[in-house]
Image 1 (cartoon, rainbow, N blue to C red):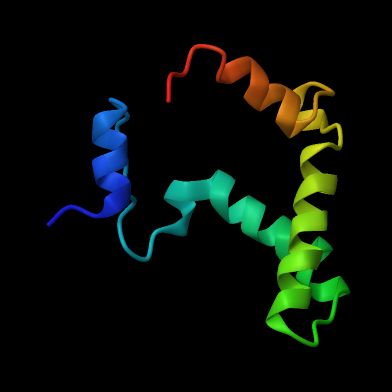
Image 2: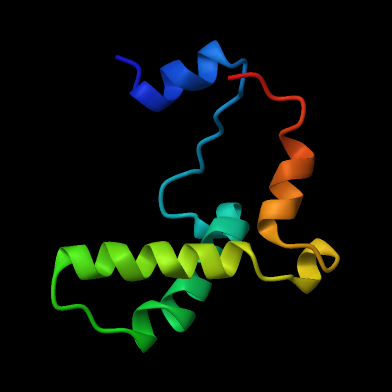
Length: 90
């Protein structure tokens, strides 16, 4: 049985790559993203409810995605994504 993500990827002609279990080095960009979230969001915040977590996480995502990054040549993630999705049909 295919997962919903696999079905979506197939309909959009996207290749979904999986890493080997227990090999996080094969997925360095995602691992780095998790580390950034851990150090700059989770370790600096407390949450009294799931709703508060969702609210603060939404703010963090907006902040992070609208902040310029050296690794993106001074562009924000949203700017970079905008350049990449101009040819995507949904």
